[in-house]
Length: 112
Length: 111
Image 1 (cartoon, chains in turn brown, orange):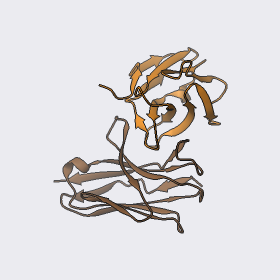
Image 2: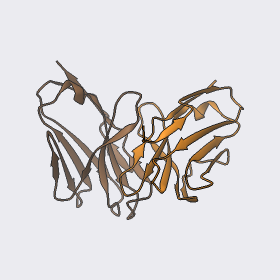
Image 3: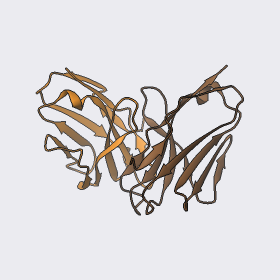
Image 4: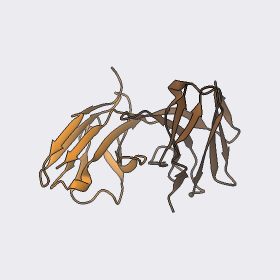
């Protein structure tokens, strides 16, 4: 079993749609959680950190359920520029400065 | 540009050759990480440094791979006797706190 599991997609949605991505992780000791965005042939860039209370940044909302070891990302009012791969990321163990474990990524394609 | 830089951006080599990649982190960042990414997969952790100390190495890092960060600033990743399976994007990241900032990567192709 992979340490971080994501549905690779692709998710093909029209502009303006709401889309949700989910992720599960296996290490209950993980303390920090992130969503990174990766454009084709580019490096990953931090989209947002994920907190237990849930957090929102504009059109993006992230949720964490520690009991279920489940992380989600909701994108509202999708834009063409949201087309990318979204990587679910957790820290390995209790340290937030050690290695990150990445999911396979979920590909989003927003169509006009 | 004050972000993480990597050199070279692309490297094509023949099987059996040695290659070395360089990473320059963001200047005040004390932690530096190496990851490898193949097509359709997320980045896989290879190793990380806090200042000049190498604190963790993945089992992926076979004895053909070695990484150094001699003065706690830039880092090098060397692959000896390259194999076709080493073809991948090699990503470097740096951090001061919990957020890692990635460089543009070095794309290695082993023929």
